[in-house]
Length: 433
View 1 (tube, rainbow, N blue to C red):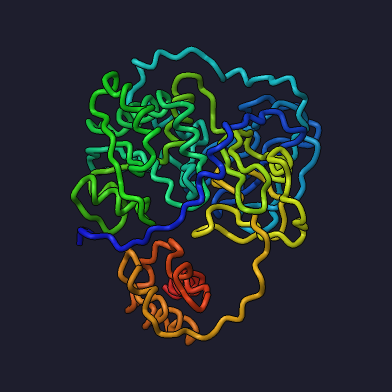
View 2: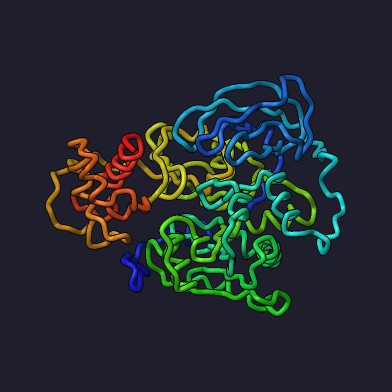
């Protein structure tokens, strides 16, 4: 069924606090840490302690589904294999590389390529060789989307950036508008799609001003403005609005492929310069940070270094008592400390003073969570089914359709973490399947 009127809510995005300062390039941290984990897939390390590595050199391999290489983000020496804090909320093994500050590039980078001669298959292979994954938060290997068997009519760039506080995509687009359109045009060629669409929130007029004058050079690409409601950046909502088609599994069923704006910008460099996925922009923001801003960094950079570059913590805030969120406040994960690394899926770290302890009353039965659920679920009923471990009821309540946007927890007057219960119910259903 097509969603003609999406449920949603206006949320104070708190985005102006990290838009005030320009994007800060921090390209030479003393150490980076390449995690040996991508999504839930462990990686095979192919370097040893003492090895010299160059920027863009393969240091690990993702095997099995989504197989692709993972690359060094700085040049230097492999000095350790150690555990580091990851955006998943746990410690994972990582390759420690000490930066030699020589910025030595792997010999494959900047190799001249006649882009006009690249076939669809060549472009898909480039995605895989570059280790390109979705930078919107899911981290799904991009090339797999372009192996779809059904015909693709449109490639959609999701630049909606719904989550409060996050401005990394906004800042990157305004810095590299033509790279975005180039990346989209290459995605269109890889999909044999005649149409490309950049979807963004209407109030982000700077995105329109940056892209619109360039569209004459990119036939088939158009802009699509969405309302300022949460979660208007939901993939299914965007696909249905643009294609007027619905689907049950993947957007390809509706003739569409959806990529994040940052992924498209990286792909432009992949195609034209053979630069793999080795860096990203991350928002460091929140009421606990002195100077919230965005940083363009090599993957594996320590977040605590970026917090210092953002002026550190506000006066009087004890870092051990701060509230850290990896990702956006709606769908991100609470973490314990700032000593974690920037990986491909980490778009932001939000720091807030720890809220006063709240005494959470029981569910009031107000129904707000059901009223605002974008996929028309009854989250409190799913919570009760989970607490009873009633997998039959969980399935009948369609918990598997939850998009984990976090709205139910956000609007709950009792401050119940309903979204967490629904996510756990989905997991229970998967295990019992």
